[in-house]
Length: 110
Length: 140
Image (cartoon, rainbow over all chains, first blue to last red):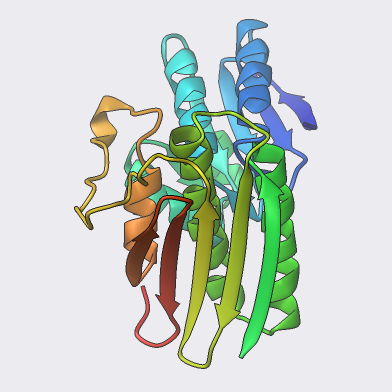
């Protein structure tokens, strides 16, 4: 799993450099994101704009990450589209996650 | 009518491969990206369910997948060879987990029920056959 980190002030953008997030990589994604948060990156934009597919096990991993960061920081999800965005809506988790398709809007949440 | 068939092992990497093959097949058949995305999500969630529940997370078991694309509908058939009845049985409506409780799972079956237009089963002593139909007109 490739995740590229970009730092701008106190805000970290984790770019998921993958096209698919599914049960075969969800545990790895969860561990990697937890490590990123533990190392002090708790103002976090997760850029999922390259994803064309995501399943519910990956959504569960996203919730774990959200719970971990919520104690001290904040998380915004940038770039969900197509079936990926539909997954958030169908599960009503679009009400829980902060989702945006504009990177400047994402940065303004912090 | 177009037809696609594959047999995979019961592990999540094999589901990923099947999913990628399904995407290629949908593109070849000029199935719309929206319908293709729905078919992919239905298939992946159903296969995840087979591995987690029918095969208890064990790899080394066979799963047959068949897709038939007709003018009005697309049919996905999934056969497993476990002795466990599918958890989708009974056509009982599965409610979404309450989002305010920050659930970490439990969406698979509600997603399949939301996206598929019909869900049918055929059970015998040798296998479980799950048939998921997605209509192309007036679909979700």
